[in-house]
Image (cartoon, rainbow over all chains, first blue to last red; front, side, top):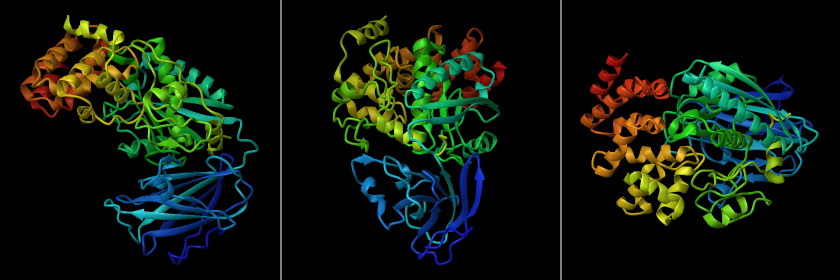
Length: 360
Length: 153
């Protein structure tokens, strides 16, 4: 089925291969960047309620979304509004080796008809690059409500975390807490556990170890978020990282959330109840990024998410006062020996999460 | 004893430099790195805050990140060196000893080797530490550290 056709800059556009996987309509094609490094990619929405498009250029290049135009010709996303502004909406507007855009993000219907993405491809010096091949993978879901759904989560023990009884016990208890947190926003988790041999330690997704994360994503369920549990990461200062905001569903080096077990067990390398709770919050927090959620405020206090129902605050004290319990707050709020629970999400945050295509 | 004293003082009266460093260390996602902390105070203020926060209880990664920023100071700062040596032998903090092992490449080889000897000794009596430390020792840039690791097998 031919779904493209508006590629004015690239001349001859490829044809999408259409399929269906796990109740998602899927579109796949390899595009080539046009003479100015830009391309227009068009596809039809046929009654679905949200989509996720992922761009993956050949090695050494990055892609990003410059614009999104709806079937009525309205530009509903202009990337430069966000790359130079004070609000965070989607990381698709930033050049990356794997770049994903989910839509709609906040509100609005996904109207039927032809949607068009304006895409840029750049080299490592961020110069626009022409003639570069890039994969375009889209998934579209039909969902009658954005207030409830089920999310498949594949928890993958990797490297030396495989078979570590203390880590496994802590993770299973933490996942139970994560289930409670997401239940409050209408999302039920369908969790499966996997053991996968891998290098040890791993880099974070998007930083390195791309082959490992891609291999994991090829092994686990398609319509699932991969949460990879490692003992520690190559960058020992990291303890949790999502492969994107939102993250890609099809198998890439960024199709995962990673969590370091040892960083959560602290200076005694043994999990206390409080540390298990924070481990659960970290998994829920990083998965929240993967679903498309930003911090309500960054810890520079001059950059906010776009949601109307997360307060806009401008100092550490002010932000802690109004957001300390929010799951997506950028750091836990603690006294000398314990932290306040961070297990709340606003209605707006809940709606963003429910729109992600993996939530069925 | 000194470390215990400043550790206990954290809960009682925090200070602005320490608070700012705590927020940097507590960040859930990307950690900007130790260099980013240097702008938050004098070298002594930053070091003192890191030493205090290496004894923090929560969240768990704050003492780990604080320790990772103390280790590179150990080659030139006696207080940092005393703390690092203490972590290698203190049975209560295998996590901080693991951080030291992970950061050995940042130290001059003679000091890295001294600490690696402590690590090998600890591996004999500390199962949690022993499960995790060999990988870092084996991949060290320092040949003498790698040799110690090989000899410990």
